[in-house]
Image (cartoon, rainbow, N blue to C red; front, side, top):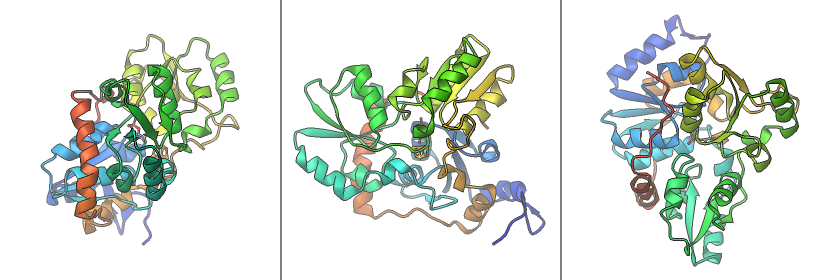
Length: 328
Ligand code: 13P
Ligand code: SF4
């Protein structure tokens, strides 16, 4: 199928999406790493925790999830009676890919006295093998509720796990997964950029390696970074996470200046998440029209995965996605 930009056979895609969302009683959920045009039409834009909560609470019949597959899977696990569509089923995640369920099961079996505290960026199968799921906005709070003498496996993100271990002093066994996007930032280029903007703070996502986090004034989830962008005292902020998040900052805070942290050549687009970028307006339109591609999860697996997600929602309590800077 071929599309012209914003048009399909003379039809305005934006208008068609609006018509279909009403007709289908659909809610459009989008992550902050989505393209600006998708963020702007979504009913709700949020971080992984916010989006899970929205998916669990919605009374819509259809959830059109503009994010990556593990996020849409989470929506289906928590809202099994809803139709959940993902505009592009190939929208995966390098962290999910780094943690095959059979290898994770063997790792768990080799450490029977450890509980598995697992980042939400993983497959449904790995969630089913885990005790408690965390997001970057809830990990700290959840970890603080686990007794100090309890041994912990943390996967799949070694950088988030390492950051939590350094911050809390907890000694966790780390799965060696990484996010290819946050790995792409260059320390050398970041130091040069800081020198060009003296006094500009750096806000970084904890999926960044330690050598980037060492230069950060604030480390937190996407919603946390948005909250920091609102509150920091200066007028220029260096942002070390996927650059589409800056759309929300630029909309809500036009008087401030936001600069994406650089990759190795000082100016590359290597920190755009290639998986998130697969979703387009055209594919969202087709997903709402055809109610495909649809997330389906076998019921036994869903129930096993739901246990660890329910624990996250209980233990995260009222942790708020403070970063919603006024999406629709
Ligand atoms: P947040 O939960 O902070 O939105 O992170 C999601 C993610 O995939 C970051 O790469
Ligand atoms: Fe996965 Fe990294 Fe993309 Fe987030 S930014 S979805 S962790 S690949």
